[in-house]
Image (cartoon, rainbow, N blue to C red; front, side, top):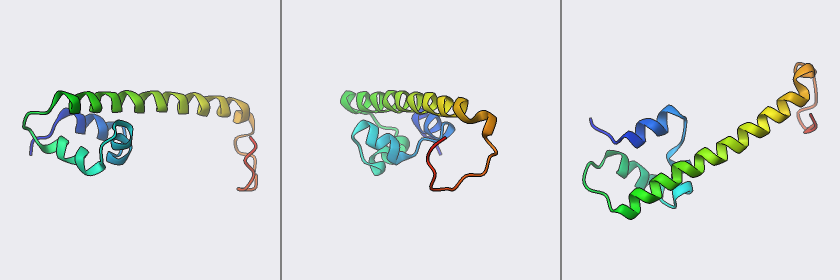
Length: 89
């Protein structure tokens, strides 16, 4: 079965259809249709998908920076027991 490259990229990087759909203003169902429909796409739809991937990349970059900062704060005490309700690192 043939699929578009966007599907391979999405799966390889753990992006759900819902996440990508939310990022580009399309439903998860529409993302699925785009992944497997090999017909012509409207330029507006292509642009939405590109912008959606760019948004996910920016969002994940910010999340990774925050993870790195939190990790640096607690790396020496990483295995210290804490209450699960304790949100302070």
